View: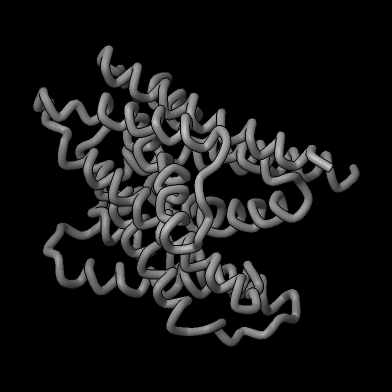
Length: 293
């Protein structure tokens, strides 16, 4: 199998891993507190990624410690922590879509912070996504899930901010993506562990199912899927790689519908559709830009 088919296969498997995980974590919140679960998941994944670095013969020293620490706080402590916390009360499908509005926050942040002005189809994509967020949140009608929805939006914002810091690091000389990922996940996981110690919660109820979910998160979600993502970015055009961002919330929504019986209200349905349409527009622009000579 050539590099291109392998990359496409990796993209499909990665999207399935991340999409299905929304359902798993939602169910796991019945047996574990969000910070406890997130701390074990991320620290375990970080250790595995450091093992990959050692196996590749690459240096284990963390890159640009202050910036890597900042990425870890934003991308892991806040983004993963908020997304997991949101699943305690929020529906898996809705939380997935709200969190994966991240690319639109990134477009808006990149303008003042990186000097990357939105252009072309990015403008209608941002407008559609903001309209979709309003419909999903339904601020005019309290439905009992405003708090978890706000956490999911905050998760996407923190994720976007971490991407801005990462891009600045690339401009300053670049870093090995696996090294950055390993250390930021580990640093962020340590802060989550501190939060787990401070916030009172019941201990994790370990069952065979819970152990399997944790193994899935440590090995597949926090390590294997991340390595697949970097491989996809290396081989495929950015626009095609962006399909991963599109597929994950769609799959999360599908699995939540099929396995958990979750249903959207009319406003939520239209809001989710607008955000998914906006993501699709960004993918189309990425493909169009790649094909230009």
